[in-house]
Amino acid sequence: MQDRLGPGPAATIGVMTPLLALVFSLLFEGFRRDALTALGAALAVSGNAMMLRPALLSPPMRGAPAAQ
Image 1 (tube, helix red, strand yellow):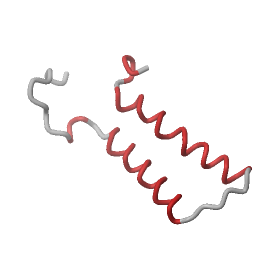
Image 2 (cartoon, helix red, strand yellow; image 1 turned 60 degrees about the horizontal axis):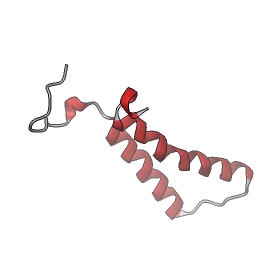
Image 3 (cartoon, rainbow, N blue to C red; image 1 turned 60 degrees about the vertical axis):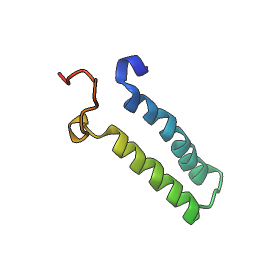
Image 4 (cartoon, rainbow, N blue to C red; image 1 turned 30 degrees about the vertical axis):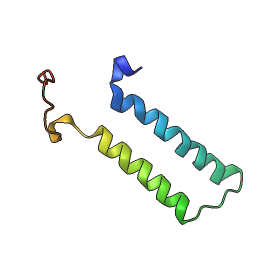
């Protein structure tokens, strides 16, 4: 999948899977959220948002091929 989508979008699945499990646990298993749970979820979502932002916002790396 990394070859097809790229490393950013492929890594999103690895980060979002535990968040999806957390939602199911909240809905069906009676898990009670607390501040630490909310902080962890917020960090995961914000990290994904930063990882998936367009490459135009990032400075080009030396030796990297030019964007097409």
